[in-house]
Length: 321
Image (cartoon, rainbow, N blue to C red; front, side):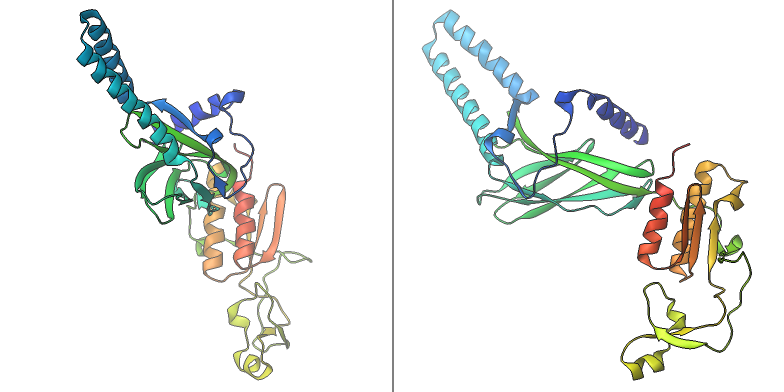
């Protein structure tokens, strides 16, 4: 399965070299499907029916069989109506995509497309991107279709376009429309390696790398700032003041860590990235303040979801070996 996905991605990348195969500029959303956005081509079943009708009509002409000719042209008119029906099934649909959330390499990325119908008739549609697809029955109410897109490599993943198609009403032709997304989604490295507590160094201060201990008595109180540890919040003082107050100590905090690329010389390139990714997640889960030092980038000590996101993005965007 993984090999097939990589093969499909390689084929898609090769086809995008040709102008006619590239996705156009990002569509404004919501996109209302118009006549110029709909394409209709026969399916294999439709081609078989067309071949059978051609043989029927040729035989009817050869044997001068008017009844068979009438039947043949009647079926041809039904097939023509089926083509028009497929076109009308897409016409007027309203499409809106939801911004996907970052994932870790190897996980499935979830992309949701919200579809609002024009009429009340229930029809079957297929939403796809590359080898990923999902079906849905759309009636009078808006419906969401979620695509699960595999990820193999860290970095930015480009989702250029997604397709919505239908075989309505007889399966003789496939009508489809593409939504140009041009969406770049961050794929973080795969977190794996040793536990944080087994191997880390203390965060570096401006004057040098030192072990610092927190005194038992606070130096003073100050207002809470984003990234402060919950352990430092003075709850009683906060209740009296009406806002969150944090204990400020004379010395640093032993919870501060330096996640250092150069301390992992025994690991290969990608293994270092995966190890640091794991430590970033564990440090945030354990409410530890940390700094990150990687080639070309130094992220100073901090905490919180935004700090974690910056560190994970920096690791994801490191050049590939």
